[in-house]
Image (cartoon, rainbow, N blue to C red; front, side, top):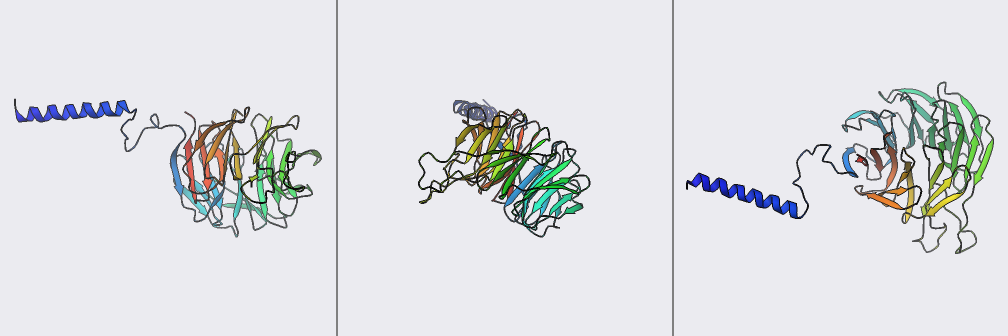
Length: 356
């Protein structure tokens, strides 16, 4: 037998042996650039780096072509979430960016800042369109109605302001009587919900400004002391079908003096006002919540560094996404529910594939 023949037979045998090993332990060799078809679900597709401080807010355009991010470095960055390319960096903020929202038509990006203002931008170019002034303290959150007509903002000045998104004019100011820390508007654009620092959630008629209802979570069954209550609302989300409201709070059961009920996720029935689920996802805060397009699953992010996926109906844990080295402070979900985007205290933004 020729020496060359012996060599090629040895290589073939080694290749078969290696394939058998991979098959036996259920592994496949890793390729340098795996195709989308071979990418596993719940894995990081892209990591976007560029912020120099924690990312506090993100917003995804309805068509999924523009991702806006903002945070403690006082900048807003515009990205292509499919390629990870940085489109523009906006440096016209004078303080931290706390919240972002993009209009349903994708033409306006609203930002809430600790400089007491709301700024409206062109999300494709980063050009400043208008500055809304009127709050007398830091602006905590902004939300644009699904019909694209109204911008809602809340501030530490204990007011909620409703603005005409097209003209920038103030429509009215609502006075919840406390600091509202989170906002959402119902899918039909008729009702505004705000979560408060005292753990209550209020709902308002947007057209009239009338207070409709106040949801108050129950006090702890066996409180450590008389003042112990549910955690203040940190994050708030409403399901696309308008039937479920979910708020995140703080679990301080690790502290010697426990001030909250130790449950940092509360799920409400919007129609009845009934509390459906009341549980903890782990010690610390739940800073971000997003609900899937089919209203069946929700994701939470917070100080634990882990993104957790939950079943809305049962309140059971579905999956966990691990990859951030800091708290997860912002979440966004594509309209088709296939892509989840997270902003973190580790200064990065991650794009995850969560559905085929």
